[in-house]
Image (cartoon, rainbow, N blue to C red; front, side, top):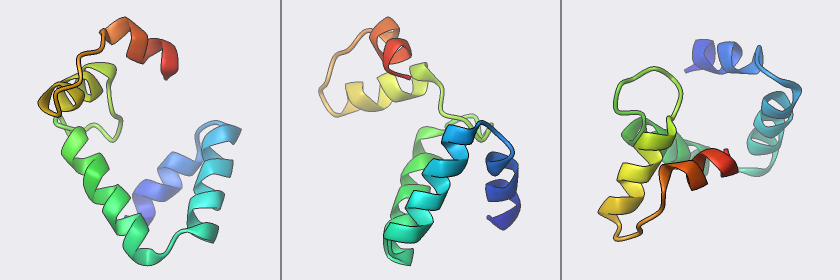
Length: 74
């Protein structure tokens, strides 16, 4: 997990700041919950969540949204 966080941290400044906020304000249990959710979304285990993976997860929840809309948000 630490190695993955370190690789993630090497990304953009926004990602780095987001990680700092998460670590500072979330409990260990909340971080573990988010990590579990991320792993469930990351079906191909690339370390990134693709728009299609988000679209499929939302569809399973009964939410229909175009992939282009998701890409616009991301």
